[in-house]
View (cartoon, rainbow, N blue to C red):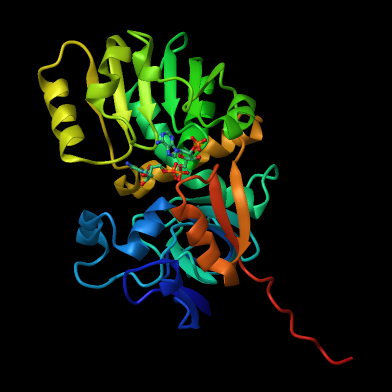
Length: 334
Ligand SMILES: NC(=O)c1ccc[n+]([C@@H]2O[C@H](COP(=O)([O-])OP(=O)(O)OC[C@H]3O[C@@H](n4cnc5c(N)ncnc54)[C@H](OP(=O)(O)O)[C@@H]3O)[C@@H](O)[C@H]2O)c1
């Protein structure tokens, strides 16, 4: 099979496509022919080895995961002897995070892992694009913030992968949603359900005293200290991006705080069964027309370097999705 590999850390052009061995599914695993996969911020960190602490996970000296990519959509190619939920030909999508290997033509995943059938409302690119944003935003908004109807939720970075999912989920929970983005993405964020959009070049949401029950900094660009004054009395600030400060603030405000709190979680490290249950929930919401994927662009697999360049701008709106070359059908002589 073809796979995109990087043998050293660096700029997007360290990635190249090679022929390598296909994985063999164990008896409880499904072999998926990948049709779409996502190049995300985490893949960029794994490729570049930055920020430096990312190397604790990706390899101290050189990359220990040469094939990146975790979120995929594809078709079941083959199933292990004990697989009952899936059959060859099924359209499926899911994630192998925190492992990687989806930037390849084939991957293997346990049938009871985060893999579900693609609902008819989604094409393969849309299915792959659903995964990262929603499986990240859901635990933040539901499990940490416990968003309730009538609350006011601000999403900073509302046009990004995580932010665009957060806007839609917060609306589903009955919140009034305020999205912060650049003027170019204002219409997009409104179309996802935001009640108000703040152009981040023209106004600073942090100046609005006591306005928000939840501030979800989906891009980790503002600190708890800067946002604290904009939180309501028992409000919570959440960030997707780890730092020493947020880790300490989350602990301290949880143990001792009576008022405003800070929180962070690492959604990729959650239990596979939790992710599987959340994927099923997302499928239900997609089938009811309550959620849509947001795709910045679709890039052919052969142009994966370009996909990385786009992610590295930090300005993508939604997800960058790779599509694999169509499977070549061998011609049969008449
Ligand atoms: N903790 C976890 O479990 C977890 C899981 C997944 C991802 N993450 C992290 O979540 C972060 C966001 O990922 P993502 O894929 O959603 O990012 P993304 O799609 O790359 O975000 C891009 C968006 O960020 C906005 N932006 C850029 N600079 C900004 C600034 N200074 N202030 C406000 N918005 C700004 C831009 O929107 P405008 O140009 O419209 O403003 C752009 O559309 C990443 O750091 C990723 O590592 C964490």
